[in-house]
Length: 170
Image (cartoon, rainbow, N blue to C red):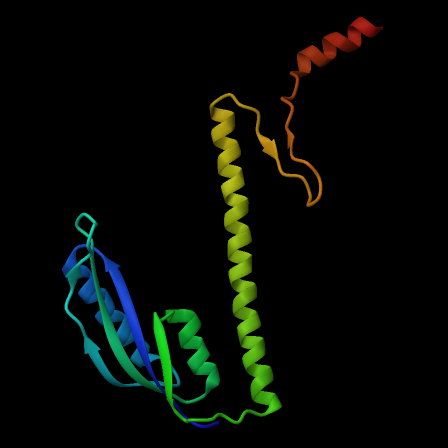
């Protein structure tokens, strides 16, 4: 595979200003240590205060990097999520089926990973909401399978009341 040369922009926002400068520098240093990646040039921009925000700052860095192959290129895109990326060499890419299969499977793996994380977080959110509802004395909501209506969970009757009802029937 041919080397890919690109220019990327990494943005960061937060506080205090010294922290975001340090965090951005750490990100670029880590990027340069990645397998299949070589940072060729980097330019850090000054930290500026975010307008209409209390005590919030932002900065960015322009980074030129060479990638050994498409997998390392897309790996950086997914793992570092630059704000912008531009490939300036080569002008055209020729890719064979093996390389396309590897790239497709890499992307699918990442998508499945993100989907799994999202589903886990949604489940944990529902559990926390139901725990809050229970603490407030409200009835927890039971999520129904897709296509069915949600139901409210009935509070379990105490075992002594059940026993009393059984005795009353006899």
